[in-house]
Amino acid sequence: MKKIAFIGAGSMAEAFISGILENSLIDKKNVWVTNNSNEERLKRLSDTYGVRTTYDLKELFAGADIVILSMKPKDAATAIQYIREYLTEKMLVVSVLAGVSMSTIETLARLPIAVVRAMPNTSAAVGKSATAVAVNERVTPKQIELMKDLFGTVGLTTFVEEEQLDAVTGLSGSGPAYIYYLIEAMEKSAVEVGLDKEMASELIVQTLIGAAEMVKNSTKSSEQLRRDVTSPGGTTEAGVKVLEEHQVQQAFISCIKAATEQSKKMGAVLREQLEVTEPTS
Ligand SMILES: NC(=O)C1=CN([C@@H]2O[C@H](COP(=O)(O)OP(=O)(O)OC[C@H]3O[C@@H](n4cnc5c(N)ncnc54)[C@H](OP(=O)(O)O)[C@@H]3O)[C@@H](O)[C@H]2O)C=CC1
Ligand SMILES: O=C(O)[C@@H]1CCC=N1
Image 1 (tube, helix red, strand yellow):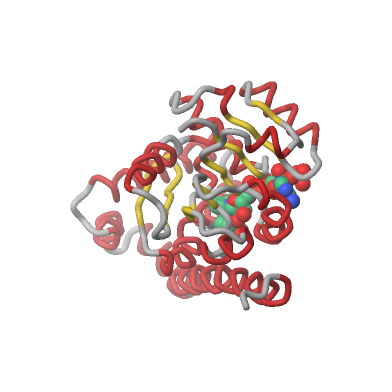
Image 2: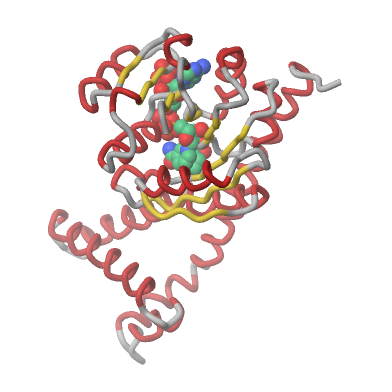
């Protein structure tokens, strides 16, 4: 890894910058970042991490072997069209964009390039992302090893077929938000049952960490672990009965399906736009 160029300097880019520098994967002087127009943000990244920032694309791409696309999917077409004259077949293009396929990226780049499409989540900021990664046929075994190192700096990495990435996006890409939603509900309920907010918050977080560790380390299924907590005629049974009455499990299933469909839809919208702006024949 000689030089990384980040296109997009938001929260995802920052999580990766922090991860790769903390793990000394590359020297900070070889990490370059650009964004659309927010100079203040670039200055903050440069002050915090010592990375280089620029709006000069020639400078950004000179000697870069890895390009990380980290803008929002809606900005992908404009951004890639803007940078494409600087992309070369030797570069590895890594995308964390939800819904945007590798072939869409190649079409926009107008170049047969090695593309890695990843779906991390925001827990990358604390090195705990659950990241799924797909690669196209031009990615070499050496580059795959490099990707294991890169994504390993922000958490767990698993390699999947690209077709699975929309579902991964709905499940673990958006997943932290579902858990935060649950925490919000637990926090609100804690106050309603008369607990101090701060103290309750600590109990909730530890309960979540503990439950997650149990699922991770136990040989029992999550369903069995739930049954273990539930004493006949006890408090858990009374609580879970209410969840069942409200079909909360079904609501979560519908939620993940809707997010998966949205990821597919976002990709399709971009593909339709491309048929107009980037006709292949
Ligand atoms: N947030 C999440 O939970 C997750 C997000 N993702 C994916 O990560 C990507 C980035 O998300 P996130 O970091 O949250 O987004 P942010 O909104 O935090 O950051 C987006 C960045 O893209 C920049 N940008 C916009 N247009 C261009 C352009 N034309 N050229 C260069 N840079 C541009 C913005 O610059 P400026 O500020 O100057 O406008 C900004 O720095 C998305 O595609 C998303 O799908 C993946 C997994 C999880
Ligand atoms: O909501 C989104 O579109 C992005 C992708 C996964 C998480 N956040």
